Length: 585
Image (cartoon, rainbow, N blue to C red):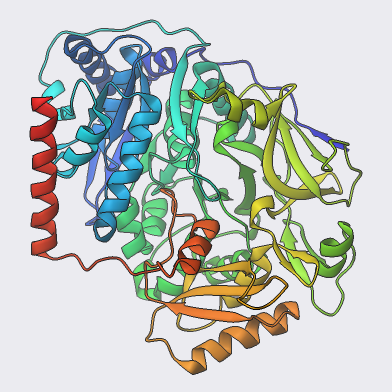
């Protein structure tokens, strides 16, 4: 069984240098919204001029076409101008996440050093505040052209435009790293353009360009490609909020959607759940969500229960159930590979987890059911198959590995031919995800490496984690289910690592155990209640299950260090020493 998407629309441009140049002639803008809901506007025409000036400044600094230039910046005009300035210089932007978890600075510096080294970054672009913390990473990675700020490069008046080719690299983005260390995914201008063309075909309104709002990080593909690059490609308005502002006050997202009368806004499933927990009626008085026609839900497993509760809760504000659109994709395919229809109810199947676990087939629910949500069919230009371990294509209703083919697949993992050859064969990308096709739609059941085996049965960790969503005292989206072999026992058992919002208590542990047993019929062997921030995460916020297991077994699970003036001063001093060392070498 193969799912085949419709043809792509004719391409508006062939590179993002062309796309931004065209957008500069249109009457469109980017709006940056801060935590106090103050707004700053950047017209596309002004963005083109700034990008050209930055391109010239980069060339003056020694950046050549094809060089990799890292951006370590928060959401804002500096990131956007820096990103396109790098492309206009013919170089390759490499967005990296800024240091937001200051209690985990040594982990952050080690990860950043590794990523800078993997891509051979020639220069790092930052701003004055973030730069203060990057000295150790710059020194360890031996970045030859240093770490100027966007403000410093913006001072010049001369402009440069390097005419890119479709096959040139337009972006290196790191994969999420939820199961292994993040890999450097190389994407050509053609891959990015065709992905944006596919998204346009799926979300193009009857008249004009779509209007978007996003709080998603710009170093993550859903925020960068799905929102920023798509807005540039279609010359449509986009409002951007800082991710950290959304996490503190989710109502900012809903108010921005209302204020800008936005039609498109994507988010992971946890964001919809966070709105249910944190948004109070007073926070959304007068909010109108009736224009929000594409509420995309992706980047992590989609919960039918969360979608239902969100639709019900915000119906009084004009939100329509059919606006919620589960989607599926990955870094290696630029972003999206499957989409649900823009109208009609979203399909959710209650299936028998035992039949799925033991026989690899979809069967009606038995005593304990598992609900899986359709992520739709293939996007334009894309093909999807589900195969068994021998590579044979499976029929409908059979569980297997999801493979994808299309014009927006990566050129490869930068500098890692062996990993590329393992992931892509004969033009097909093995996603590493397990799923099945039913009724012409794809259902994703989780990562193959995250499967929990209990009494010979394979379980997706989401079966157990979803059971904890409504427990008071458990942090939303902050629990992992793992299989492990306890000391002295012959078989794998269930381990639950759960972050809490309250002090750990025996009663809460009993609630967790009972909820999982009632939902799945499996009794957890070990339940660990943890302080907030203890579980390791990827740069995009996904939980790193296998790393959590490694730390648990090494007795190395610990909460982040408390940040105060002393710890901040120590980090600033270490960074300054790093810059001094880099200057001397």
